[in-house]
Image (cartoon, rainbow, N blue to C red; front, side):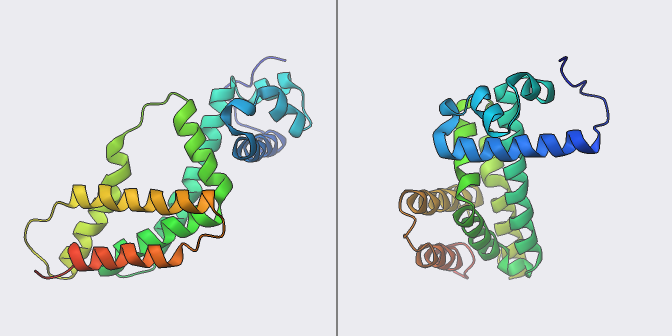
Length: 197
């Protein structure tokens, strides 16, 4: 079976099959890791042949990258909605709470993101990790009438590290309550980045 031409419009059946393959890939990578999620295992779980999987995606990496993009899109949508539902002065707190909450509530997505980042070979853009939060911090400062120099890039990097640590601890210990450390991060932001000196 020749691969699906990339510029052809997908039928409803093809769209559904692609969505199924993405869901299977997320689940399998979350369960057994990137190395354990072979195309053969993905095909078996989707009740397809390996050739059928390759019809939809040219390689395992392409399928994993698509699955990663899907879960990142869900994360961005959830965090964006939470931020949009608040006032600019509260954007950083909404960002932290929704980011940790989404990753905590969707551990398979978290594992998918981590595994894909480690194994697909796509170069990471460090600025993409901190820039959005730095922009939210700047907007919150403006909304509160705060002026003066604050190292927003550094603050965003530190906050991102705290988010990663909390989510990682919850992944290792599902009984770990993420609410107190999440509120600690929010309090730290309030006292250091969003307070009047």
